[in-house]
Amino acid sequence: MASVTVTSCWKSLLLVALMGLPGLGTKVQISWTGRVTAGSPTTFTCSSNCFPNCIYTWSFKASTVNGSTLTWTPDGLDDTVKLHCTVFNPQTGVYTSTDTIVEITNQISVQVSPLNTVPSLNQSLNLICHDARFGDPQGLSDLVWYKDGQEVTLRENMWLQQNNLTLHFDSLLPSDAGFYQCQTYLPTSQTTVVSLGYLLSYDQWNVSISGPDTVFPGQLSEFTCLTSCTLNVECTVRWEFRGGFPVGTYFSVHKNEVKWTPSLPGTFQNFTCIAENKAAGRSAEATKMVEVKDIPISGSEAMQLSGLFAGILSLGMWVLLGWALETVYLYSL
Ligand SMILES: *[C@@H]1O[C@H](CO)[C@@H](O)[C@H](O)[C@H]1NC(C)=O
Ligand SMILES: *[C@@H]1O[C@H](CO)[C@@H](O)[C@H](O)[C@H]1NC(C)=O
Ligand SMILES: *[C@@H]1O[C@H](CO)[C@@H](O)[C@H](O)[C@H]1NC(C)=O
Ligand SMILES: *[C@@H]1O[C@H](CO)[C@@H](O)[C@H](O)[C@H]1NC(C)=O
Ligand SMILES: *[C@@H]1O[C@H](CO)[C@@H](O)[C@H](O)[C@H]1NC(C)=O
Image (cartoon, rainbow, N blue to C red; front, side, top):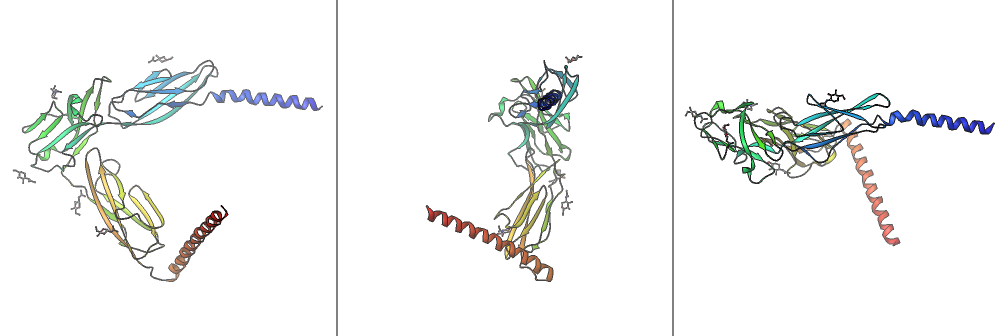
């Protein structure tokens, strides 16, 4: 009897293993090496395991390519691309697919020269087509300038200089405002690349920080950076804590919001919010100074305070305990 039981047990184990096989073929992976850069070819590999072999199909940006590898050179027009790989397993007749979103770096950008020049009406301005890979920008050839997606037509007192590398304005007009891009031909990869753009505008961005001027230990306060530029489209926001990082029991930064529970009364904290568009060379900032005051003692606040002190006390106990243990350890050596 006992040997029959063992046999049926082995049978069911074998069945599980066989049933598990098609499942093995369903894992699909997309891989590549290095950064994906506009103007440079990257080879993406789709892999899976089918017996005798898998049939791979790629789809991305409205095109379809057969085969397990895909070699693609981004043209700079996208900052991300979605790659989709479908695997057909001829043995099981099953299709499986996977997606990946790839970030594209563009090393060519339009910049103002000198950097950080703020364009103003009736002033001269130089826009340059800049390639972060070379110190010598003369490496760029066949340059074409675009404004708001249309090829730039030169008006009076507007010039192309240095083999079109520089677009020069003698005196800016209101009609010169717009989104400028340059396009160049890279002989190494035989591709045309469109640069990151520069928004020429005469408006200064407004940045301000909302939130209380006075905060209390143990109380959570919120600060929000308000910008006239559209977040994550025209500009991104970052925070700086010049003169010291906020001290407290809780602190978090999420995009344009800071949450803080201070702990040290009688101190000042400065929050600086910077709205910027690095590619366009534009930025604006605001700073808010916040005072941490002693807690006005009321019933509920006194409760919170005693809780806070209990927290500090227990932290202190741990530090003491750690110190004591370390001392004991050292003495035992
Ligand atoms: C890809 O393969 C499919 C089927 O095997 C075929 O119909 C199609 O023409 C191929 N496409 C290309 C671009 O080779
Ligand atoms: C620019 O020049 C025009 C004409 O010369 C003048 O009317 C205008 O006030 C000037 N604007 C600024 C901002 O200087
Ligand atoms: C400069 O730009 C003009 C107009 O877009 C074009 O005709 C010319 O070929 C360009 N020159 C060079 C050296 O790229
Ligand atoms: C910036 O702030 C000023 C004054 O607070 C206001 O007049 C102006 O309209 C604001 N500009 C933008 C672009 O929000
Ligand atoms: C905060 O900013 C003010 C005004 O800019 C400055 O006087 C003060 O020293 C700063 N405080 C700290 C702690 O950095």
